[in-house]
Image 1 (cartoon, rainbow, N blue to C red):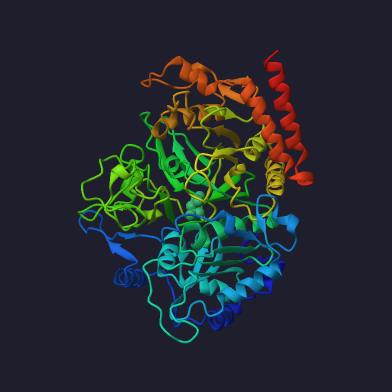
Image 2 (tube, rainbow, N blue to C red; image 1 turned 30 degrees about the vertical axis):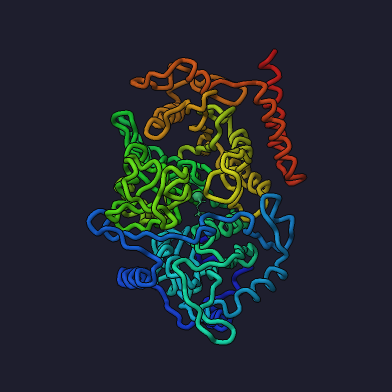
Length: 612
Ligand code: SAT
Ligand code: MN
């Protein structure tokens, strides 16, 4: 395993003393009015927040109801990640894979040069030296984001470790990733005339460009989430996945949690779910069964590597949460509600007349006089939600009451189980254990999920989202599966077990078959008893499934058909599923690992036997 100081050859040229030279070069390109170096201090946060209140970007919430918290309303056209405007500019098109939109690097550079020339006229350029993972940790990585958005500057300081110590590390020779971001709206035009600012500046044109070989990120035109907080999806997933491929580790779209059973046994689970499919809820689960405890370690990204003990270890590189607000409520996720009780920046939620926040699914009725996410009086009769479905909260991990004490351990924690889950209203059963690592990789490579409001596209439409990395892998996903297979070989008998879950299956009337949230501990309980070798599992065509008696449904009287439906395999539906899986895998051509074709064949043979 390489460390921070073992810079890969391609970026070594960036060198140690080049940070200041780079900032000077960027300053000459971007032409900001002033430059502010950020240090992550409380004093600087206060200053930036006050400036944003003055400029109208932030609305302070009630000090009594939501202390230290603010509301931002984005431009209505800048509300989510834009996959159609996200580009991987690898030297060779084939390296980006069918999962990415490729742009020839020199053409993209020419476009960026044009777009970024003078783009910060009249604005402040914030320089954010940040670390993913504890500063100086053996698995941590550093980067420097430039941005003209104070909202992005404050958000980055919540989501990462922004610190002057990072500059020291760079000056001492650490490799670093440069990331340039602009909202794309200068405040001075070409003739030198001032242009009035708006609360949420952005540009109609948006570009989120990654250069995996030179480890660079350029983002133009959006101020929102994963488009703009470049340390998160752009660095910690897309660029980090490319670094990991070269160095033998994996950057994954996974939550990380420690679960302790009533007998006091602790297990670490890393779980991949697509955006807005309940990662935060799982990571902060309040178990419905007595005696269980869940400690939060991360809710979105886990860097996985083989540890010195030969086991798989996972580390959350982030320091904050950028969670989906709608659906987060007192009954569904009480821990999240306590986490966001103070010092939180909310984006695109509704505002109550007494200066608090509200959204669909918060668990209280909408108060009279609610203001919707666009800043208009909300009229429920119009049928539009009060909060945008992708409304978010940004808050430091340290605000989470269930945060594990060792959440920033430099090497993370050893992983006992990997969970893969999509949002599927049909076909995929509640829980399946992979027969072995290769089968687990097949389950990951063929994960599919209904689209959510976290990115553009038709909500509800099923698409493949392998390992929940479809929008986030900085290289060909077929190579990503090869990396997973190789990891299994290296871990051997020490590899964690792999499970697939689906909390979202519905019956013919559209009713959820599984209650979800804190009740998911019943499924976790089965997984952990499997790890301990305490319960047998039934062989099914899809993998190993629980015996009915082993799934603890005490106090949860569910009709028997529900249980069967949750576990049941509909051979015709699965035959159709194998057809779309085949098409999906075929799209990866010759790079597709043969092991996955073999697994598909095994699944088809199993179905064939199933009906005979
Ligand atoms: O990419 S975001 O950080 O905006 C959220 C997500 O899609 O997980
Ligand atoms: Mn995510």
